[in-house]
Amino acid sequence: MDVFRCVIIFILSIFDATFTSYAAGEVIDAINAGGRAHIDDFGVHYREDPLEGVIGISSDYGKRFIIERVSPSDQILYQTERYHTKSFEYEITIPEEGDYVLVLKFSEVYFNAPGQKVFDVALNDKVVIKHLDIFSLVGHGAAHDEYVPFRVQNSMLYLKSSSIHFNGKLKVRFIHIGIDNPKVNALYVLRGTVEDVPRLNDADISVEKRSDSIETVIEEMDHFSDDTLESSEKYASGPKLQDPYAQQDQSQYLLPFLVILACFFPILYCLCQM
Image 1 (cartoon, one colour):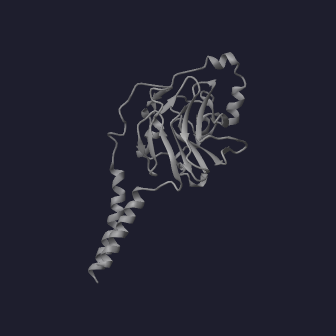
Image 2 (cartoon, rainbow, N blue to C red):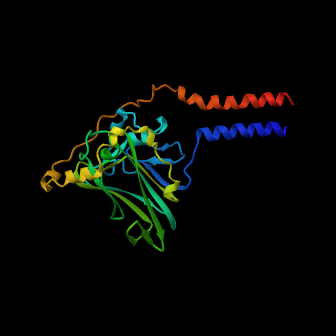
């Protein structure tokens, strides 16, 4: 009986490791911007966008595309988004002191060139990401994550190069700087360090998508006048679409079961010989 019990535990451990892997740190809050609640491959529970009907515009324009660097089950995190013709922000409660990481998820599904959508990101009015141009980093239709580590201690918020008074409310602000509209696809705060954050698969992105650097985009931005910037807003939304994965081939999900069976039968054979 003890041997049989060990076999069952072994099989269940394979099943668990095959289907689920978790972020090493504790997730404080997670938001699927412009979309519904979702649990990702790492066990992160994203809640429905709290800004729906409050500020900005939600869009599922990204459902037209299969987003690179992302598993089929987590495509939705990069296919829906919230954007606004002005600056907007999310507020997240930080319960206690410690080291944290803000993870911001993006994908560019509207523009096909660098310098078309550029914006800043701030934490409690301190800019932590300047001149973010998603296309210049990963191209069109590919996932991109930004990591912002911070520390909360003695009622202070410590960022990389500054510190400010902190009242327990983290304000993540996406700042309009005149080159189209700021946006975000999803975000979460994890208690831990950057090393605890699951990473995207760089092997899935083509070399061609890295042809334009941020420096090139910033040089192009210098040629814009204030009047030009104010008139450059565009609306990157589209009609609601059906989920393109509803008819997708599901055969890839059989692989974990085949792995389990491959491990089970040799063990069963050995037990029968005992």
